[in-house]
Length: 220
Image (cartoon, rainbow, N blue to C red; front, side):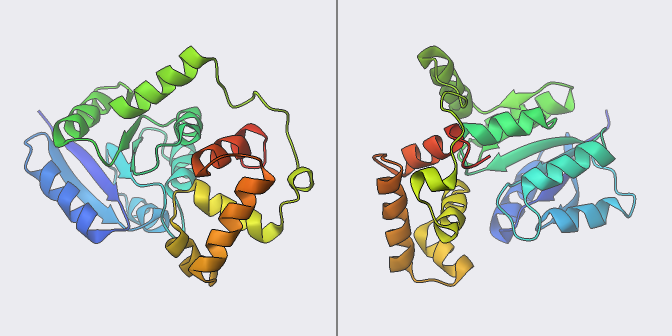
């Protein structure tokens, strides 16, 4: 039986090496390429590298996992894409499967679930990690959805362009320190923006802030 060919796309080398060691310890997988962002992955594909599955993170510089997914499904439709991320926001899952994603796994899954999910995708199925499945089930049973609120504009909440930039990075899962480094502001300033957003949108915490931002259409 031929091995499942995997292209790893992950910007943290230690994480990438750990995943590679795990996969190559299994008889059914072979890692045929590695990249630290979407741009590098596309460069590898342009050299006629043809993996069965691309296993990618979402948050990466230059080109993130969602943009890579869009390009792969339009240019290399036979390649399956599986996201392996720390981000557990439901909107990423919904958006990803809408774009043709084959699997969404969180980085806190154990090795057995990761291998099971990849095998399931390789055999033509789709897979969502257990934690995400339970979150989706909770959303369905509670009657929540992401279109409950009418679309609102920045002016409705009096949100500045800088606050919107911070909000987008918060939604992508970055910490205050990481956001400060990315947009060249102090950690204290980012903390101030985060608190200001919570107050302006009349929410209790960061999780609710992100949820309401997507529900109201401020973030898409």
